[in-house]
Image 1: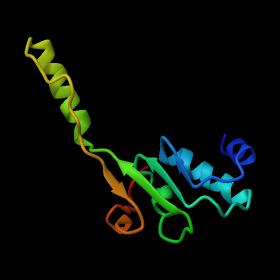
Image 2 (image 1 turned 180 degrees about the vertical axis):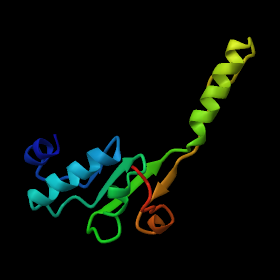
Image 3 (image 1 turned 90 degrees about the vertical axis):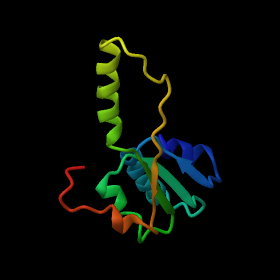
Length: 113
C-alpha cells in the first residue's frame, strides 16, 4: 500500500500507520523508492524491531505504546459487569510516545515482540 501511495503522491511529508509492523513495511517502501520527502512516520504497539530503527533513521520514527494494564482493567471490569456492577463506559489509558529521544528506555533484548 505504501508503494502505491508513494507512486500516487509526489510529495508526502509524514505517514500515520496503525501499527509498528506496518510502519516497518512503509519504511522499506520509502527506502526502496529512494524518497527523501517523507520526514516522519508513526506506528503503534512496541515492536522491538521497529524501536531499533529509531535512532539512526533520517526519518523521524515514533511509536505510541499502550499500557499493559489495559487488559487487566478490561478483565476486572468484565467481572464487575457479570457481578451486576456498573462500570465506566469510557476508560482512557494514556499512551507513551517512543522515539529516538527515549527509545533506550524501551529496548529489551529479551522481548518476544
